Image (cartoon, rainbow, N blue to C red; front, side):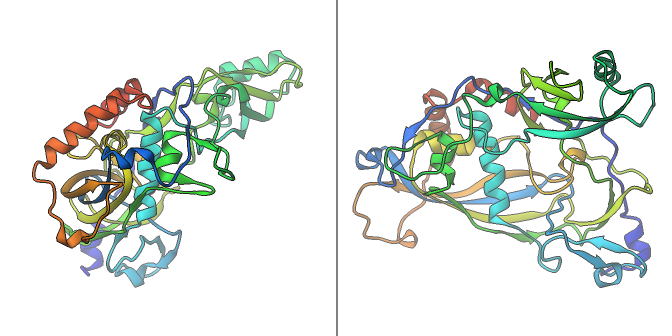
Amino acid sequence: MSSHGQKSRQRSQLPRNPKGYDFVCIPFTKTVTPVSHVRKIGASGLAFSGRMDIEIKTLSPLHISDGTLRLSEELGFKKGFTVRSILCPEDPIIPGTTLKGAARTYYEAITKSCVSQFLRRMKAKYAENERGASTLPQELVRQIVAAGGEQRGVAEVAILPECFERIERCSPVRKRSSRLCPACLLFGTNGFAGRVTFSDARLISSPHKGGFLYVVPRGAPRLHRIGSASVAPGTRNTKLVVEKLKGRKVYNAKYEPNTPSQEAELWDYVPAGALFSARILFHDVSMAEMGGLFGCLGIDRKMAVTIGGGKSSGLGKISISSKEILAFPSGLMQRTSFEQRKPIDDRLGFIKQCKAAFIKSPFAYPKSYEVLKRICAV
């Protein structure tokens, strides 16, 4: 570990980007399919099982933590302060659950799937003509006051249930007649195991040992920013309703080092340019589903996926490339192990073929896919 003087030169703070995210449009409805762990398409050789080895490169500093605070001297810094540590600082990893969660989020965005995670309501402080004291724009504050509300207070902001009527989260699977959306069919849900598994990503190489960053913590975007907000009638003017949602949030902030601030926390990190290796296992997955998986992860494309903490400030950008793909038709008697099978020779051709099948599939949402590629382009 280098000295404190060397470490101090690596200190930085994430800029106060006023936005740092964009929106991917939401489909008007979701596609649902009966559940089955033994899929009929496998018997005809149109589905695949196997594995894909991937390499992950960090494009900006990466921070994945369990929330543990460690003394600065434990990490090789000067005594007297605490640092939010990354997972396994001696041998950093990216948990498979983190990779799977990111993959599902992006897969939901480019398919006609349910919205599994979405904040429905929150409280917002407001104040009329008091700069810095209101989390709501003055236009909405004036609406509250005009409707008879106080000039200063706390308003409840909620998304209209009608916005989720056709894309509501899939119900838990309790019987064979249950139907699931494309994302739940591939990644799983309550009562139904997913058909894709991600291993933990292990560090291969890193430009240096990292250091620590000054990071200003931020929460989720305010609900009034993701749609059209107005005062709800008949609620005594303290409730705002949001409709006409702009879409799903996707982070695209640019990371730029800056100077420290009093509100910042100290975070340990993995530097940009670090390489990780991981493996994805898939079982009885159609070519279209494979294409969607390749697309949402930006496999072998100039597209960034964001994971970990500080995404709204540009942290956690990664690119993913395939190193080897082993896939064989499902539904056939398999008498040999993975190690005895040969990987696909034309790997890039297979990826291209799967992506073409995805675009033509009934569950794909090409409009969102194109928007996602534009937002996440690097």
